[in-house]
Length: 199
Image (cartoon, rainbow, N blue to C red):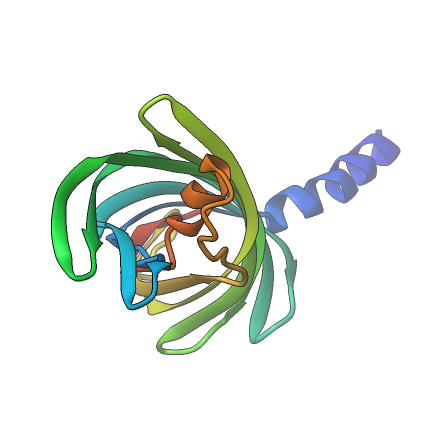
């Protein structure tokens, strides 16, 4: 009986130390303005309108290092639609359809505990990019940083903060194909609010 209790306690310690996080990011997503010279002195530019997006995230703390913790994350951003516009030599062409973008992600964060908690990490995103009948997938790494407050409570800890994210790679538009054009239109940054609960 004692062995069974001891085994249960040993197995229970890692479970008791686990920390889970469920959060929602809501913020502005910015897009680049790829352009190319189609003739001497004449430039074509395509731009997607900045868009408000929302993404759900799940986090699991795998190591508590005292003043900091190491967390694994997963997330999903549903499809958003942004209007595409074009100019040729500075003259507007008007609407050129819609860019549809979504992603799923997996990453890791270091969270530093303080009165204002700060987090920094990397996130692999598989981004789905669509325009009319054309589509492609853009896999790249993003850097994320956030800062905010958590409300102490016995069971769950609500938190609220601000967050910024930037891709570590981008594509230029060389008009070599639709996939390259879509990748050149992919988001270049995100700024917004991140809120949720930890338990």
